[in-house]
Length: 232
Image 1 (cartoon, rainbow, N blue to C red):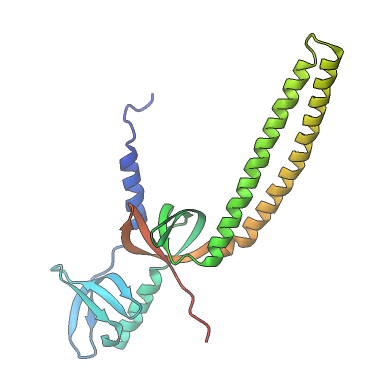
Image 2 (image 1 turned 135 degrees about the horizontal axis):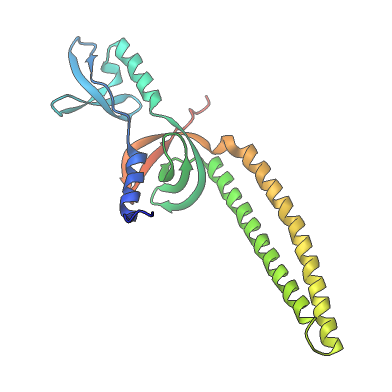
């Protein structure tokens, strides 16, 4: 028996958004400053590469520069900071939304549509080329369907009553359409093979390390790509 409960698209979208923006809860711990002072708090964000935002049990939030922390806490901080980066596969660039790229992604920690900050140019180029290949495959597939339809109609027309010239013209049209269909099928197989090889070769380029910024724009979570350090 089918369930009488209807799915609410808005609730589904909200559930996906929450799943994409949820961050694992941090632990409450004692932070020690170089001065010897301590603070009991949990990590809530990393506002910059050299600072951490923490929240006490009473709800008060503080930003602690890494340089102010004791050596042991700086080591712990860098370990926790590294955990924020998740491996994500960018499957398709869908649109540009302000400074971000709206993308379809998949991964253990995030899936569906998100906004990406700092999407590498190389990854975007690969994805654009992939979409061009997909469009070519779709066009040739459509052409095969059209040629098949033309050949079928021409064959049918050649069997009905009509003049000898009419039958000859339809048989010729059916033959040409069949040849075009066969040629298009060969092209399609090559396009699919090239596409599969390209996907395999470029997988590493579109598999990126990202972190959830905690921001939401246009009802989508904003993730940031890790930018590799510049070579000296």
